[in-house]
Length: 64
Image (tube, rainbow, N blue to C red; front, side, top):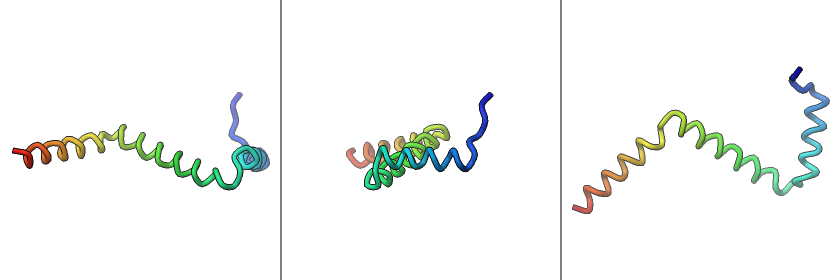
């Protein structure tokens, strides 16, 4: 069965990730992961689409 990793397993996984990506790439990877999660949450809630529709309507009205 699937179980949650304990502290030792997490440390080993983080060490392997650190070796694979290096210290310079980890902040970029974390930033990209956070941005992806943020975009996913916006898409699920429908938050981003409403804002885009309002902006598109404002631009159309300004052009007239």
